[in-house]
Amino acid sequence: MAEATLASTLTENSSAEPSVRDFLALLKPRVMSLVVFSGAAGLFVAPGSIHPVLAAVAILCIAIGAGASGAINMWYDADIDAAMTRTAKRPIPSGLIDPSTALSFGCVLAAGSVALMGVAVNWAAAAILALTIGFYVFIYTMWLKRSTPQNIVIGGAAGAFPPMIGWAAVTGDIAIGSVTLFLIIFFWTPPHFWALALYKANDYAAAGVPMLPVVAGRNETRKQILIYSLILAPICVLPSLVGVSSFAYGGFAAALGLAFVFMSFQLFRSDDDRHAKRLFGFSILYLFLLFGGLIADHALIAG
Amino acid sequence: MPLARPSKRSEIAPRDSAIHRRKRVRNLAILGALIALMAVFYLVTIVRIQAGLGAAG
Image 1 (cartoon, each protein chain N blue to C red):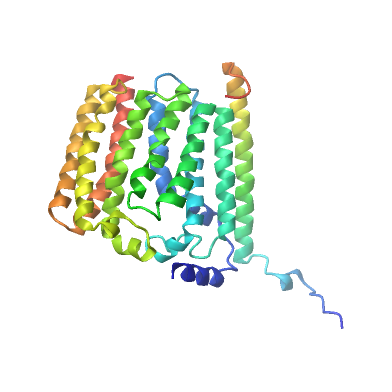
Image 2: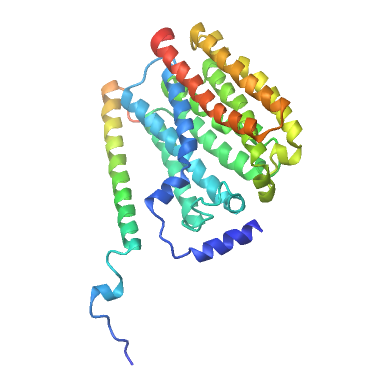
């Protein structure tokens, strides 16, 4: 069904010439902004120093690598994107970009970003960037996404690596501090995506994606969101316990964590899409505030 | 019987059609990206030499 929809759209628009804007849309700019921000936070709070030009190049490579992953993901998922209202207007399902062009674009950017990171910054950061792209494309997109409701739990690791890349760009290694930043995003991802999946469950069901609300039901999903929120709240305080930040950040993170748990608890108590939408929106703000707090703390107090 | 050749360029394709504009913008974007890449490599080389980091990380 989804493949038939995609095929007919591609035939209708096969004469269309893709614009620069269509290629930019392939890079998933909104996802990229969060990845770049968390990567920059890792780079900023890491011990040591890096030349501003090399820091800018490192962030550019993280952005291009994230965009490349998005482009390859859109190539592979074109059939299910065509079946979901949220993604049906993306460049491939709408017939604006040929799938093979999108794949080539993604592969060139992926290889280019890793090579540039290695040559310009260091090969430890380049290796983690390559691991991130590979994990997102092969483990999440091609394997987990269509096969298990735990897809975003394990696949969430791909989105959690950018602070480690930023950190490694400065220090050239992996440390307990960068692992705590990884853990924050790793445990933030499930409640974030499950809140979205709760009010887009019909879309996911139509596309055959086994998201938790589709497979296990809304009650189980709301329970899992609350459990992950309860794990996430203390983990967000960890940077202040391992010396990455001061206790001022710890207090700030604890307050934000309580707000996150409260909103998850509201969703757990009443099965209402408004609570799910509110939690989804807040989860994005939460991550921005958390990493913004880390940067501010490092600039004003701990650094 | 030989086909009649178009007498004017505009009969082959309209010069300022949307497709041509898009292609032109895309080509300029690729040119811009290549120039930016050259600038990045130039800057990185200067910075690494000044910092005594050598040619590659």
